[in-house]
Length: 374
Image (tube, rainbow, N blue to C red; front, side, top):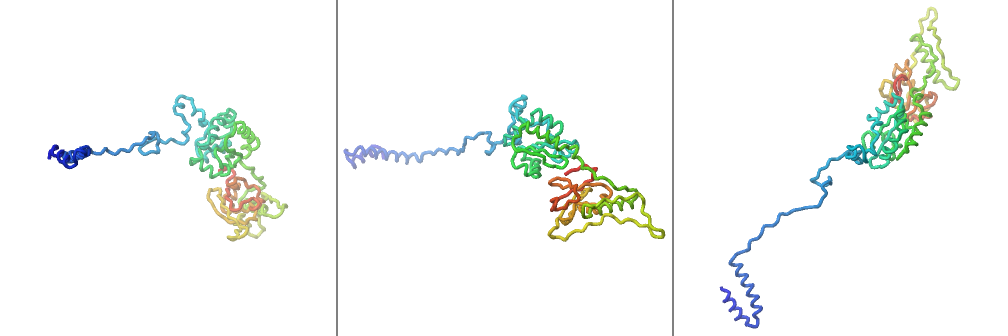
C-alpha cells in the first residue's frame, strides 16, 4: 500500500475537518510500515559494569593496598631527620648509650656483680610522658652522670615480652605507664617508683639519697654468724653441730651455745669408744589439713626444690634444720635462708613462721659464698 492510497483512505474516513488528526495517524502508520519492511532496529551492546571508589592509596586497611608495618617505637621517628642528624626524632630519641640491652634477669645479675642499682623504665608508645622522659630526664647531665656511675638503665615498652614480664613481677608499680622504678639487683626489692613523667632533679636526688641510706656495698652479703665452735675431728664436728642446734631450739632467753673443747672423746677403760650421734634428724611434720600447718616450697643450695609441711608455731630454725637433714653438705657449710617474694633475709631464727608471715611461702637456701639470685 502506497502513501497516497493511505492519504485518500484517511480523508474518506475522517473528512476534511479532521485532517490534523489524520495526519498524526498517518505518520504513525508510515512508521509502522517502515518498521515492518526494515525489521527490528539493531540494539547496541551494553556498557561493561565498572565499580570505582575514591580511596587514598596509602590506606593499608583497604584491599589491594600494601604498606610496610613499622615497629610501634618508630611511630614518632623521622627517618629523614635521622639521616640529616637533627629533627623531631633526635629530640625524643631513647638514651641508647645508657641502655642495657639484655633481658631483665641478666640486668639484675650484672647489677649484682658490679654493685649497681637497677633503674627500670617501662614505657607506653601512646603516652607522651614516655617521650618526654627521653627528651628531658635521660638527657639531663646530672642524671646521666649518676647512672653511668652507679646504675644500670633497663628500658622496654610495656607491650613487648620483656615489659610484660616485668609487669607480672611488679604489678603494684605498673598500674599505669610509663613507670620508672629503682630496684636492689641483689634481692629484687623495689626501692622506689614513679608513674608518669619524672623530673630530672627528682630522680637525681632520690638516687643520691639511696646511695647514702641503702648502699649496695653493705647489702651484698649478710653478716656471718660468729663462730664459737672449734672443730678438729669428724666426731667433734658432729657433736658441735648437734650442740648448736639443740641450743638454738631451746626455749627461753637463757639458752646458750655450748662450746665444744678441742679434746677428743675418750671412753672409760674397758668400755667401747663412744661416738656422738648425728646432729640432723628429720624435724617432725604435722598432719595434712591441720589448723596451724602450712606448706613451704624450698629451693635447696643445690638448686633442687622440695615441698614440706611445717607448723606455723615452730621457729625458723626448724626450717634450717630440715635443710641440713635434706642436704648433708649443709651440715658443714654455711647457708642463708631468704624469702623469695617479697624479698627479705630470714636472719632471726627465734622468730616463728607465723610471726615472719611465711604461710605458704617460697624460700631460698643459698650458700653464703655464692652470689644470691632471686
